[in-house]
Image (cartoon, rainbow, N blue to C red; front, side):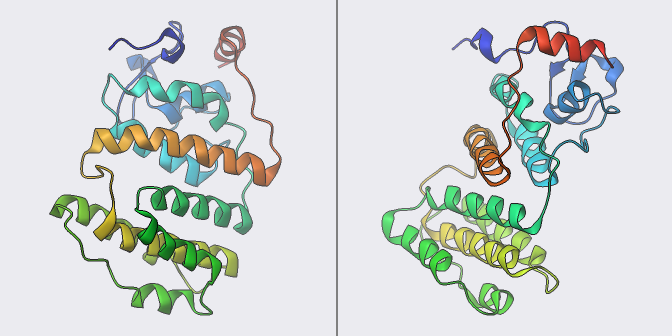
Length: 231
């Protein structure tokens, strides 16, 4: 299947590829593109992008195959201008992530995640530690993916967080612990997971825009050419 021209980067900019790059190589990851177009120094961690969104974009970029990576191009213009941050924004993004994980579950398992959203515990750290990892028939690599993700979010669930952010990380931990026994997607395959992550990233950008009231810039080829000429 050929890639639509709408998914191809302009010929006067670097080509998308995995990893970090020197600007002289003619290659860039998606976040290096963002830094270029935002007029920042070349980096995969530009100040103009929310750290959570930038992390998801870098991870998706590196998991995608060369054939699939152009799927990220339509999101490049939406990633810069997302530098506003607060506990409320982070909480909303984490809840959006949890709901995206819950979409991979059957209705019965999904209800366990929704219950965690509806009735957050008074002590989210203790509740997250105590929440069991679901048993099921997933292959070991698939199960390990969700277990490891739950550990990452549990580690981020520290006592200094404000209540909303702590609750959202609890829910995200729960979502992955339920998914460890119930997930219907192919999370063990990096490329397959990455294609879904492109959609997840778009949904996170929608959430960011809803919470902040931001209107994402619409980049025409002419606008991109002008921005690129400024750096």
